[in-house]
Image 1 (cartoon, rainbow, N blue to C red):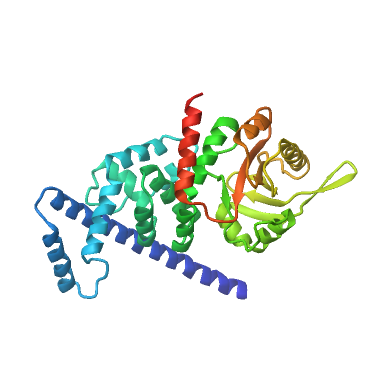
Image 2: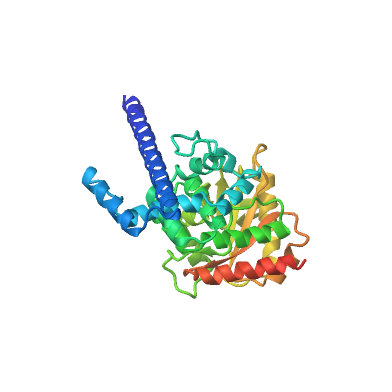
Length: 359
């Protein structure tokens, strides 16, 4: 009987979630359309700042108690519309659409609802994306990002990872975009077997309460204790399978650090932890573990395993040499136990792009 009761509760919760989503969709469309109107009037010189103030007062008089439509709110709506209807943003958005290996086509296939510019093709691309995200998250993205690429990155991740406001704020503060792009550049350069956009470099574990001088066991234990936060950092597509996972090869037992399964990639993902700078021999051990996983643990319908070697620093040139003849799907990434300034990571990304462009 309890099982049947739970089914009813599940139906209620699902219906409630759909209702919340519909309300959010209508609100975001409203803000987009109001922003369109205000932008049009201001850009044509029909309205000035005083007129916008008068509009805010008029709305309060006619819709008492309605929040968000003060002067500041109206200018946010204007910014919202201008940002996502700009030619630069729409152009980059179209580039994402042309990629067959991302989730974007599925995201924008959501039916477009009431839009003031329903006949506008650009609006039909943009609005299915922005209406799936709540207004609080939109305000964070607008205020804390600069480029169109960065905005699209967080918009898509908000949808696919279902970030709360607090989770999104952490992603922004820890420069998830720059770290993912750094990882992508290295993946493109050396490992075509690994999909873009799913891994970072470096990984940030500022939530761990461990001293600067720690052992690998300390790091592993702290990550397991803070597993929920660790999964938020690496991505919500990961399912934890265990630490010190036993692999038997020949007559010996070997124990891996942290083993996960990725639901979208349909493969095992192994995180190996090293508390010192990368050494080439680390890769040999990781490749050995990946081979053992593929032979003895991986199921026939699953894809080959991926290995992530987390080190306390690395020399990029040493990594390039070590990876040159490696046939396994592996990533060598740094980890930090403190937040890194976003400007440092942005500069690092710029330097890497310049270096790769020389080849």
